Image 1 (cartoon, rainbow, N blue to C red):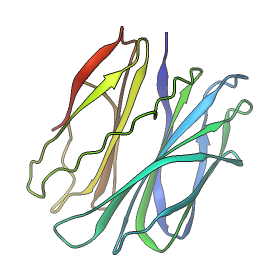
Image 2 (image 1 turned 30 degrees about the vertical axis):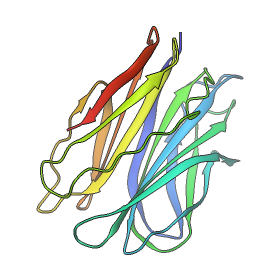
Image 3 (image 1 turned 60 degrees about the vertical axis):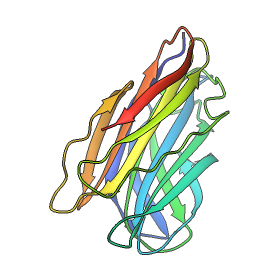
Image 4 (image 1 turned 135 degrees about the horizontal axis):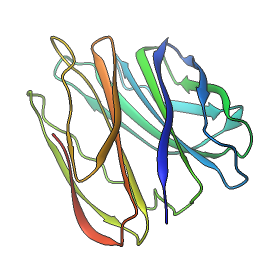
Length: 197
């Protein structure tokens, strides 16, 4: 059975373009261990993800997403993957293509490489509050889904809710917030409805 779990997160990154998000937990070492990393960052313009290192291992960038909000700033998400078989902690360094206001990261551990990002599905919500994002995802038998949302909250950070996935955590950094969610041990689904509410 596939299993994926959050191991750590950090909300202290900023300024860039190279952001050291400190020493984070990788969980138990294993020769088959894969680490999935997520980064969320905010900037005054669209800023790309140049690299993401986990414990000194250069991760493969799976995909990035950028959306301009109602204030004219850009909120970004990036997903990466790296084989990190040794060590229980290590530095996470995110290198961005320009200066950013804030940067948050989260790490997930799994022993199963099930081509999670064979298909990446993206959706952008509205600018009103509350706003909802809805999408469908096909899931392989015994697979898992990993999702994230990142946005600025005017007037303070409000709690986010997920439907179809279990939230692993949400964290504020200034007026920005990142929420991550996952689900595993599927028997195999078609067009699972996923909502970030």
